[in-house]
Length: 183
Image 1 (cartoon, rainbow, N blue to C red):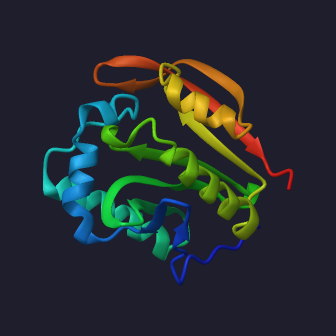
Image 2: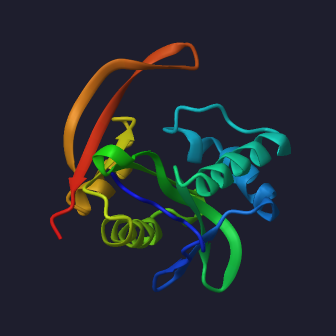
């Protein structure tokens, strides 16, 4: 079984980014991210409208760290500590050495290659440090940009579920991508 310990918290760096711990000081930025209609378009969760919702999310991220059941990073530019996005592993299946990756970025930072940088670092951490065997992503099939990023890193579409997700009064499809550790 997979043994995890996220203490001390692993800060990761790329050429332009710092992936750091999400803290309560990020409440406003989390609210901005989770309150952005474009950023939330394919997430399948309600748009956040209050600080309490942002704080609740941060608390869930911190609980996952403390219990070694999930890990989430704030994405910040190296020259500015402000949270511009999030990335992490949730729904870690320790018995099967598998985790689900999720990520978001504020729209003004799209199409700059930043999420690709973040994903590469997080995949390296997942496979080399956490010793995961596989990583999956569950996306809205309409999110072509997310699918393209996953394919760039050799994720393969493994499943397409018709109307398996109920959100905002309607049933929606899901597509599952997966990447095996071949390192």
